[in-house]
Length: 262
Image (tube, rainbow, N blue to C red):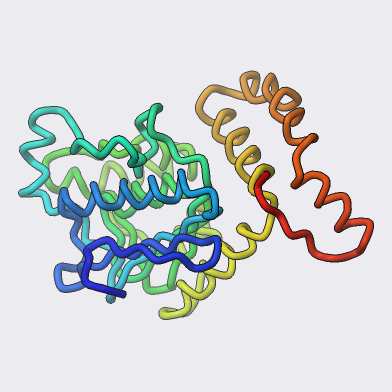
């Protein structure tokens, strides 16, 4: 899929985002992080795109950070600067958050930044040969891409501490058992399964999908009361949309809806 370390390709309404440095086990350079942020920006701002699919070429999703490159940034207490039209892949920057869903597919090892990127996505598919690990403590540091917060939210305190404080790897089956992964596949089938999910999402009303995602994220980040308060106010403009009219018409005509996102 090309020579870029982060390769982007449109597949209908789905943006395919490939991590493409297999000769280095897809270790993330600073440049790759910035290119991934730009890919997320394309997904966010292109009205024709409705869902992202993050995956990796080669045997592994990623062996983690290219730490020699990242150490000077971490020593200065910052992430790399990303372009103005880019989106923070970790979703930590409140001014640069993605408003569309991302499905992620993994295989082989998925370490450090790989697991934190996965925690920032919405639906995860793993090949059964995937091994996950938040191993920063083995390198003398700790996770700063959201892992210390989101892993606990996803799988509970004890399960999260089991892996955050030991640096031990865990299997795709363990990830599925605790709800971190939603689908398991045979190795080599993970991308096909993830793409099918992304295509199903992209057939739904973009307004409804984005409102659903916004509501769920609001509940997680600001609490249930904040999310409850926005339910009706955020529904009102959707009720006058073309998508709502199409949804009703398709129901009456007993056919699949064709949504435009307007």
